[in-house]
Length: 89
Image (tube, rainbow, N blue to C red; front, top):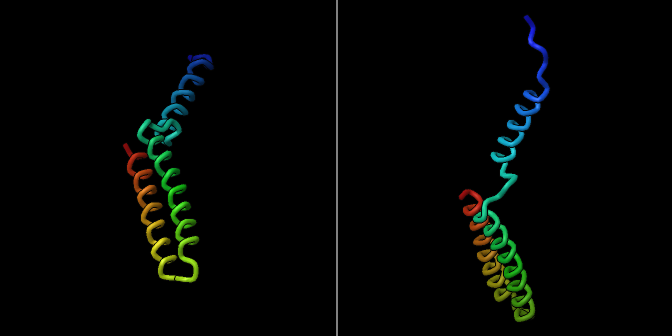
């Protein structure tokens, strides 16, 4: 005999599947992941401030500006690494 379609069972199965997909896709970041986002954003702001500071201080001296760009790159990269590592926790 054919069993009648139980719509609530189908909907439950679909909702369960969607919930599992959203959890694996990172739709709900952890506290560490959110902290990584904040630290990365803060590092971006600091890197911009470093570039601005060295652009003002450098004047016509390109070596000072290059040093400032390198320092800003280190700050930016540190923020990205923190974001990546904390998102995986």
